Length: 268
Image 1 (cartoon, rainbow, N blue to C red):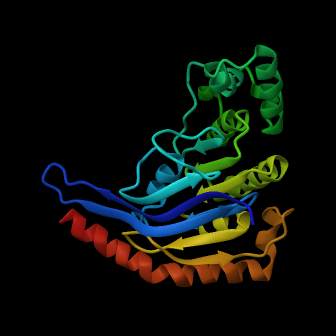
Image 2 (image 1 turned 90 degrees about the vertical axis):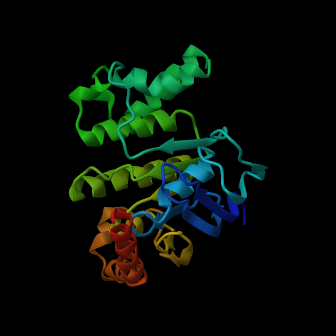
Image 3 (image 1 turned 180 degrees about the vertical axis):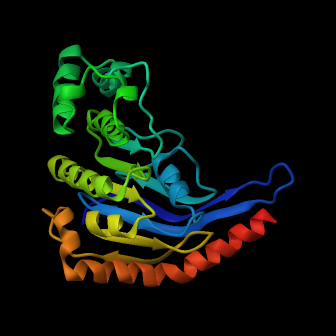
């Protein structure tokens, strides 16, 4: 089994500041991401899901443990071959769609002909051809997220990390964007890790789902969905789809209640 990324006994503890005590946000936890799989992470609010993504991407250093991508230590910066898409709209409002998508390649000094080839492919693949000269303010929220995904896609990452990319969208749009994400995953053969609060979204998209505890977040289970690779949102119509979602909720209910209690104490 080819392992693309590995976290071993990783913890993240935020130091005390401004009169507040240190916060043990996550861990210790271990995880191996397999080549070409779609892995999602679910858990109660504040359990360290986004912290996990930051540590894996190199945006945040672990307090303990080790992180590897393709057998090499991750330290300090996002490694070459890793792409990150965040929940917030990260498009540049002063750039058109095609200039937003080309931004990273131009920063890397990529040959202009290669930039054009990759941008044309990514814009077309994400269904943005009719909007390539539009500005983000002229697009819907879903389209702006497509721009952010296309900007990551042109860098040809082997590991794509997604932090609640569709969190601001309505349920129907989320399902359709999930179809686009699955198509991207199949087309590129990249390994994908998705952070999400939505259990049905995790269920639909994933080969495996890591379920995290209340803070400090640890994996309490990893659920194999056994869905076919060529799945799409019609999967949600199947009776066994509901059974997987119910299993996820049964694992998370007690943890979510505990997380609510932690939040109440923190507010006092």
